[in-house]
Length: 126
Image (cartoon, rainbow, N blue to C red):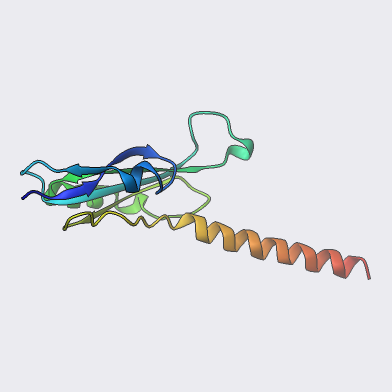
């Protein structure tokens, strides 16, 4: 019996295709790969907002580790810079979850900035 992994290509979220498409891997593959990119899309967006590109597939464990090592410093998960990360796992459908990272950090920064702005406005209006 061969490995099963979730499969999708360049999706902007870990929904729909990325969690509903299951692929029966060829015998030579022994790992599930998830590649996450955070970048400005090739089309116009307001304020140049970045989006996630999520790709999932079957892979050889050795190749997966090589990809992860080669990305090394590019995998910073900063909300304000482009980045790319690879995650590898072994076991049927083990690549269900994705560590996006940037979204939660961005939300916290925006929340703190908004709170600070409100405090400044209230202080000025006294």
